[in-house]
Length: 272
Image (cartoon, rainbow, N blue to C red; front, side, top):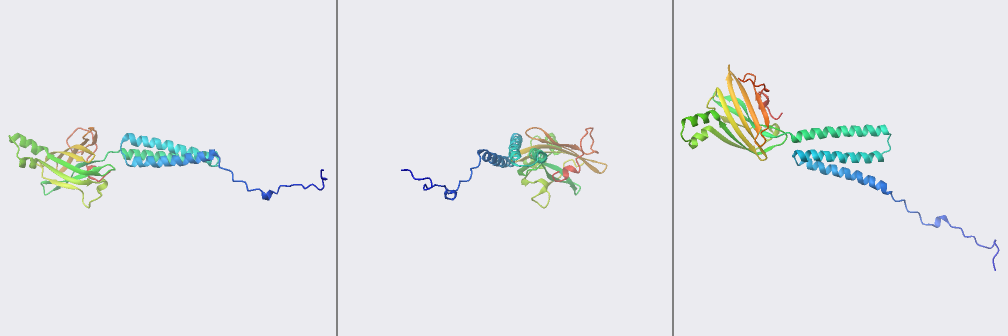
């Protein structure tokens, strides 16, 4: 028999008796945004390591282009994640890309600038001896340097007057010198790297040098003439593998019709 409505127990759910609701899980879209942001940063970091350890033109330029894509991805993710005004986002992205472009162009230009060693006239000593500087250009240290320096005037005289050349003849014509390394700006030694040579024809000398180091080499021609009590030089330095001219200069008093930059004092200065 049914009980009266008044005697029926009304069952009410106690809101405090229910277990607390679990926090809402992050949306897949938010996870994807942060994943793309972190991935872009990691790719940029990895590519910067590649650039530091490689001097190949293709690798350096390709790595910077890939870094530009990675930075663009990071900026895109931040654009969607940051609640700034549109104009503020535009300014931030523009500044970032300008700074990135500046560092990229500077790095590419510096990394691809050739590093090489060459011989430069220094000081005339005791009225019979040249103090010859071993100079350097470029950002990288050159290791295991060998220089075969030859007096072209003495060599021509010996070949004209001798039927065969002895060891002493060869030693009077050429000189082989070694250096563990030659650094940019002359770092690593108190005094400039140098060697001495007594020229066969002091008033008008012709020298050549073959310079090699661990990852490169150059061929060099030097001509020094004394005019009205002053020394004037002409020099040409070329890459041994490509033949590309790295230095080609002559002083204004040097007898020549070629229009070239002056050798002195730039060639005798540390890395410029």
